[in-house]
Amino acid sequence: MSLLAQLYYKYGTMNSGKTIEILKVAHNYEEQGKPVVIMTSALDTRDGYGVVSSRIGMRRKAVAITNDMDVFAYVKALPEKPYCVLIDECQFLTKKHVYELARVVDELEVPVMAFGLKNDFQNELFEGSKYLLLLADKIDEIKTICQFCSKKATMVLRTENGKPVYEGDQIQIGGNETYIPVCRKHYFNPMISDEK
Ligand SMILES: [Zn+2]
Image 1 (tube, protein in one colour):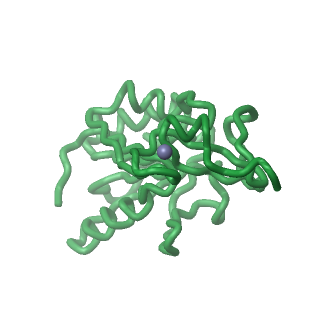
Image 2: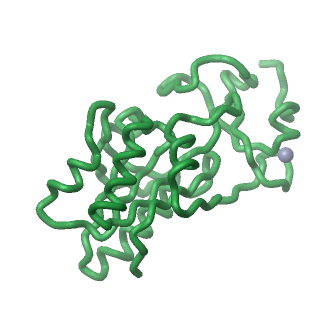
């Protein structure tokens, strides 16, 4: 496979197989002897710092993007030009990071594929999602089904101890909250018991 040097943004809800897709694309390139760079947000430490991992147990080391990292400078300084830059958890990137990724595409002519969520649990865009929507050349939705019906999941419901939560910090990693992919109807009326 060979991608055009474009900025690709692929968004989906939780459990939509984004990470599996990243590992698959990386594998396809590497099988042909073409190096790729896998990156993830340094914020996502659920499975260890700088690791991309899927719920079905596949995992790989990744470059952790910290807040003050210049992603463009990093890719430019690599000893070998990569065939593709793959990014997981791109919702956690900053505006600055997304502009740097655009420069990776435009100035280094390296395709960048960014995978992540679009909206947070309060249905607002994450910073990374907002600027990827604005800057990406190609935008794709990775579809998932609502946990409670057969409709498409377009929202993410946060639950804590089994109860839906509609307010709080946008990013809360490492707590005992769970995120569930849901359709709009079931976002407001999830079929989970309030009793626990
Ligand atoms: Zn539903």
